[in-house]
Image (cartoon, rainbow, N blue to C red):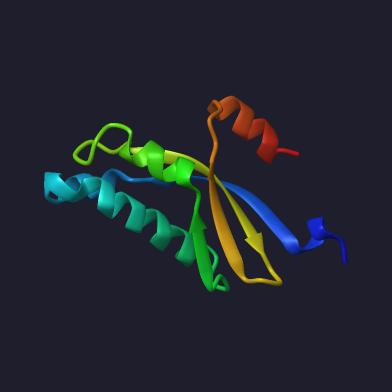
Length: 102
């Protein structure tokens, strides 16, 4: 089986607005946990979730108290190893929409 056949790629916009409901001092921490929870919910077979350091840096870029409201990521799910890798996408919504329509 080819490598492309065992890896599923999908683009997701993960809303992080719920982290603003709680205390200000640990919002970025909760945002990273929320990303992990989102991936676990959408890829139930994944035993291991790997968040790319670029995603972590983007969440923490505006300090602990002001994480972004949403994150656009690409999730690559490897069916054989049962791992999901979360990668940051730095493109506009127009490019993402064209990628999804293919």
